Length: 81
Image (cartoon, rainbow, N blue to C red; front, top):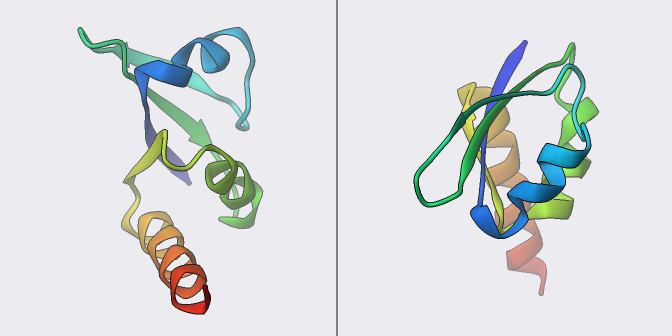
């Protein structure tokens, strides 16, 4: 599964220095410093904890299944606090 992520400029330098995700590749650097990266996974669990670690500086662009999994977990967490 190929996953696309948008990483905010505030933390983009960390992702340029180190690969946090399997087969991580920076596809684009935007004018504001945000980066778009892709990675390849076999199941969502491989990356969800890393994504949660970087919230609010990271956003799932695709696929929808990963995006929905993040939304569901965040909503569940917020409803319990």
